[in-house]
Image: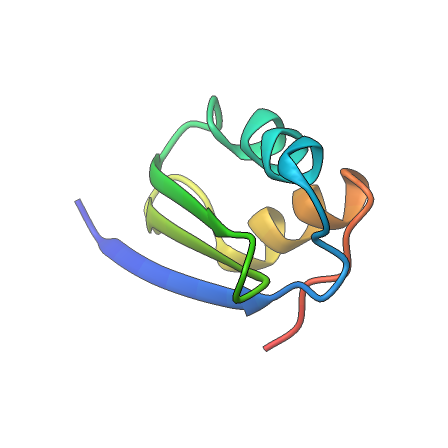
Length: 71
């Protein structure tokens, strides 16, 4: 397992619905070990196995859920 951690600033997280939408987009992805969405800090932290999924794919799924993740 090649666990990596990625944190994106996501300024358009505004409510618990946003948190649920991001979890819905990422929780069942093969290789994702942990998803933390911080409503106050407006960040998304993902721990994932880079042998199964890449950070760019995760970022794209966050974008497809309607959010704007950045480094």
